[in-house]
Length: 329
Image (cartoon, rainbow, N blue to C red):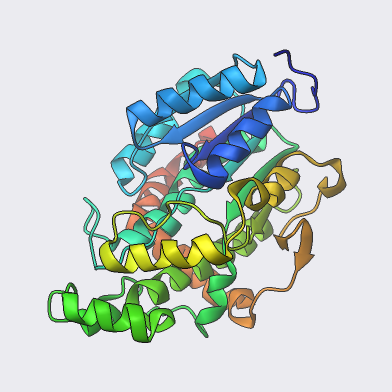
């Protein structure tokens, strides 16, 4: 099969969480439009299989992968370095990787996994690639968010890592009886889902703050609610994950439909110059008042810098501004 659509020819796109679900569909459709696509996934085997399938389905051989567990900041930094070693531009960055964890877990950095993967990975990877993205302008950043952010009235700065929330599942946050009770009697009050909602609110606060910081650079930043999509998103979460997947099988849309807005924001000339917006069904919509809290967005940015070490690196670099070495800005 030869590429028939060349609207993205010459563009370099990086898609995280691209070995399944809407990330895989997005990567495939970008490749179908002629882009050079870098697939990011956690599993070497799944990365290899995804790249092979996309090349076969689209006729585009300019599809490659980088393997990284994005819950690890060391691996995020390695990913950014490996990408920059291969490519000198980045036209489209799609932050798509994410998960929900039914019991409280911590990353290798000692950070609650939902917050580490769903928000800090977006924040750190984007900042590490930002100089290259700006140099590639006009360029686009697309952050996959969710209407789940509306479940919480504000971002919990007192407990961003959900320690108090997960205590409802017992002292160790893993009581099987408590998990079963939440799963069947109050699934939307489950600590894991509330923590997920917090991370999705963080995605929007990050998107709006970054859009403001990039004003005038030619780089646009927008967020997406893909809809309720039937994927293996909650796999590995025991009873709660099983319940969510059964529910999704009845009500959710396909990954192909869920990916439409991400693809639209990455490729369409209709959104040239459009930034700082929240989209669903390929239209800008209003997000919650909490997501538009500018002081919360600035506070979250500062917290994210501290948790990723970016604030320290900027202080170390402050004396080198005359050499133009302000990384991550």
